[in-house]
Image (spheres, rainbow, N blue to C red):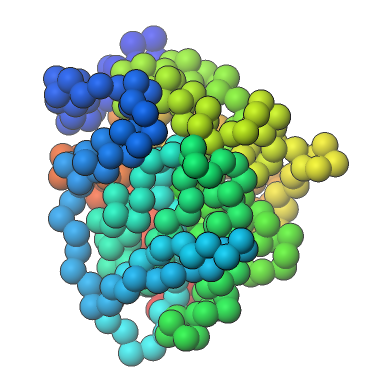
Length: 327
């Protein structure tokens, strides 16, 4: 991708204003905090620029059994419906280290409302207490559980989509590949600025390393807590773009469920998102790729200040409705 010599000039005025306000607030950088402090800081800041949570007819706390017997907390959001609704299984962002169902509640409620579907948002286990591949296994176990429980939850188990933002987008992408391997049909995967590469060496990582919200030291911090060792970077379950399987092969992507991907132009992760979209298309997978000009990583949760957040929610919801058969 071509990148600007003066990358801040790419930002929309409103986006630049948000970044200036965040900078003036003077919070310590996340990578200077302990993981517990980082979790608390992210949680405290999550709702500041986000939209008001949409009221829905149905909100339920759910407990999902993981393979080791631990129960994962999840929350189901759904509009009123006479018939079983299709469902988006959603994994929140936060570098595998911060974030929660609660921090992504406005987004998930809005998607449920706009797409007229159920959304189940999962509190998969976080680093550093739980390192790779626990989050990947939790994501898979939540899909396996949902396939078995959909009827009991009054959901349409024949219409399951996977979604996530950032690290959650990685989990959704990896789970979609594993579902293809298992022969489990999915309606689509919904990826907001997913991480897909094992190493942060693309041009966008250099151009947008500092001053665009998600900074290079944050990425290094998150992955340092999440990964067990350097070899994990080259595992496809961390890096679906270029990671390897046990036999040392890059994973083939043919037969993976169709993708809607929304990227931010001014984001270190943009290039690897585009590269993943290209690999999927080369494998014959249908990809709908939107790049939101002048936006930074995380913008979909800035709807109070940034109109493109709502645009992205609507674009994603339209893709969901289409994949679910416009019910």
